[in-house]
Image (cartoon, rainbow, N blue to C red; front, side):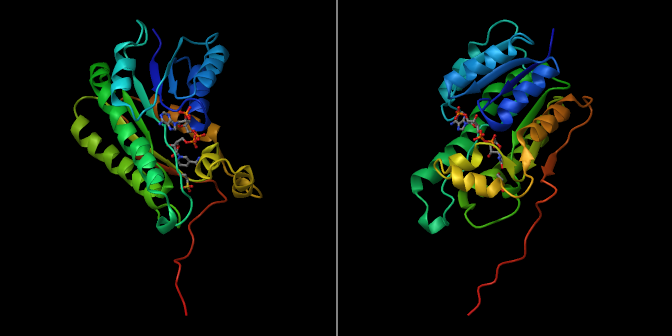
Length: 252
Ligand code: NDP
Ligand code: 8X3
């Protein structure tokens, strides 16, 4: 029987690329996200290669997650890898101009959503034991501050610390936990962040070489395919053409 991976946010970006990469590697796929049509398209694309089960899921809804886990069909229950990828940034403006609803949406999705899914899958992953994995999508924004990152970066700092704390509690169960923290990667991320501003997205990713969704998918698949005794704690990855900047100084 093939290994089983559950991916949140499989309808776009890293999640969709990871679905394709895991299919290449022969894993059975549980694909979730809010956009049903995209899940159907992905199922059509990949179900010739590997078994695929899709479920429309908003990670903010803890009850819905329990329902999805309880209703997993035979052959999809023994999940070996959970990819906590669903997430978003909103409100690129400074904190003092940001909408409170946008802050709540980021917290509800990137923190509460990730915690919801993890809690629902922990018993299964522990049952799977040695070789099981949780991969959390953090961000360089969880470690490095920058203007306009406010709640987004703080939510990713939570992801990093939650990853490390889970490692402590899961020691002895065989379940591995990893925070993958990408830098600038071209996906729908900036479109979402800017409320659909294609020009802003094109400008950010233009005239340079950002990471591609497939780069991160490769790292996710690599991380969970390592021998069972190897745990990557945190993997921070940037495009070669991205680095840190100088401190900002307010001058007269
Ligand atoms: P995309 O916008 O391309 O994909 C985001 C995915 O998250 C979509 O599939 C979306 O699916 C899903 N999602 C968003 N909100 C919810 C929700 N409430 N419930 C379920 N699914 C949800 O962005 P990326 O692929 O770039 O982002 C994936 C992860 O990587 C995020 O956690 C992001 O913060 C992180 N990241 C991104 C970086 C980048 O530069 N692109 C860098 C570092 C980290 P749907 O709308 O169908 O629900
Ligand atoms: C997304 C990468 O640099 O926009 O997490 O924060 S960045």
